[in-house]
Length: 451
Image (cartoon, rainbow, N blue to C red; front, top):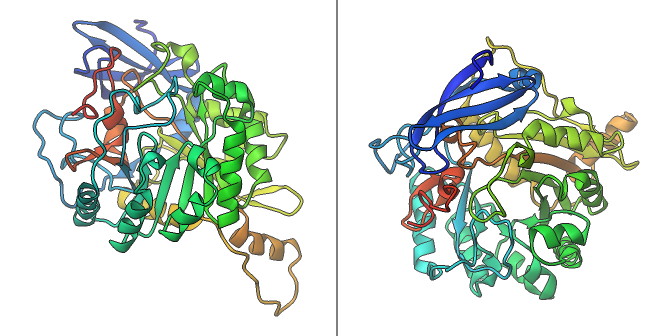
């Protein structure tokens, strides 16, 4: 421990070995921000969480909490042990994840769910109906993502989608590796007929070597086929790369260019730097980490001038340190015109209402992560030149680039966790923040998933 390193702020975390709650510090080392904590039994842990102290200071913004309207658990052991949600959670649900199976048709070396490893029986339709009902009773309807495991291994997936739509959930997204979408000609058509809104497609790169490293087999042709089937049926697709240093961080620009080739059927790219929970090759060190500013720099450096760093902004829903987003309009000549702009925040800026951020995020995703039809604009009045084109394209050719840094046992920051708006429905029907639900110790012990 270096006494001269500035302590920027205090928080709490957990020990990666035993998952005990620990006091923690955010410290500056050179131009990087580290999370530092010390377990009486297992010693000191220091992990880089943000590369660029200057950007960190301008990125963080205060927020007025929005506590659960109907908390399902009480505060007893304290965060992160009372999830359900408890009365001290500081953000409403934006997206609710329903894990409808732990079975999978892949055995990926990297998997936050450790899917297909001794999977329990799938929840039946009555149980899933109970989950939908619980969401309605706790403030829903929310945006729903059907996840797993691999949801398409269930024969009744269309009925699960249809049930949710009938119960009032207007946006239901499928989180999938895309294999069945690619291999079964009429499958996407059936899912759409039952009410599917969008596909959140695992897409790690444009080279088969990337899939062999992260997924255990070449999959690029099937990914492309899945996208084309969704495009043919008017289902919006979000490409979701898991970024791992030395595996696909060189491919960020190519992933975006590939996505633009399939726009507007492909609505955007959502990067997820690898987090070390569930199943992963080995315990990480700092060289195995990609932080949010790293992702933004990779996008800018590899995009041949398509993007500028200031076009990416912090979230209005979850904690500012959890994610970034950039919203653009794709013009006919291939340019991307940004309609987000990051303005560096000072420490005396006005707090953002968390409830308002969650509501806006739900509405934005539901409106923009689906396929859109061409919209004809009235021809009355004088032409405004490119402004007319921009207005037209803003209805039909929006494109989004975003990213989210999930937390593992080394990086878990309980302040960030209490601000989480992505909640997984546990098997006993509680709402658990995503990073708490998937949290595992270095030996693989889980706080919530196994129970």
